[in-house]
Image (tube, rainbow, N blue to C red):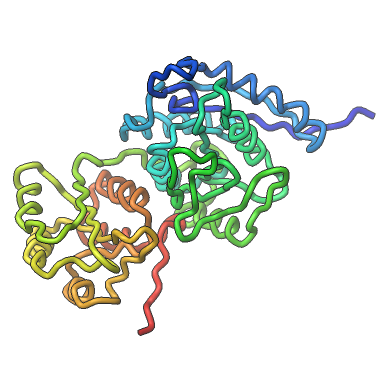
Length: 366
């Protein structure tokens, strides 16, 4: 009797980045660019093993959307990725997105918010060392992404990053190194598991990750019910970092002279700005300009519940606390909400709503 296999259609979406050779010229490296066919060969080398060990027959295809260093990624690139997913949704079972590491956190967050009810995995990966270079991690990362993309022992769907030995929710990744082969960590929460010789899935975290996908609408079995809001207004956001003696006038100047419609502000402590900036916060509230306040502490929580100045913002409803959102998630979320032309009050409400696991609001007990 002939053995039957589960068929999985995988699309590898190609966007450039270090993984494909977008690196600075060097006398000790090849300085070669690698095309989608090179990566398809890597996938095909694993097809027989997957078929033999997991009884899964893989049909792989590629889509080359653009070829850029990820430092040059713009919102229109996110929209192009989303449009490709929407266009091929009924013909593809899982997506693997090859992307540069510099802005991987922004892209993974943007796709997470936009793909509100996706019923398929979108696995993002890349490399610290390009494919074909000595010491490359590209092959391992791509094969590991493939393993998760066809994994059938758990309910895998939504946007995730597979890199090094980590599996992380798309709204929680944080790059910590430009050198290590394991450069990403899960920012405070959102670690979905580890991948090496074996795959270790955190079942509770994965279940939580997947549960968000049916929060707005039922899971999209077909493209006609796939809910995608694919626009982002990043040009209307200013992201500022506080320092002692910072002028409060800069906020009004950016609004009136540069058309800024929202701010991301990295303050001190637990989201505790200097009191001399309060007039700027009052100006923004009067003009209905949302400002999200985070902390400069690498693993901090901007709760407005620890020190007097943060408490003042909370008591007077002058800003939106970021709590434990990373800078990538809060920025792309704010840009995504702005693009929907929502009111000031709705944006404030949505920024504090946990849409895909990006924010965890806890009350401090002091």
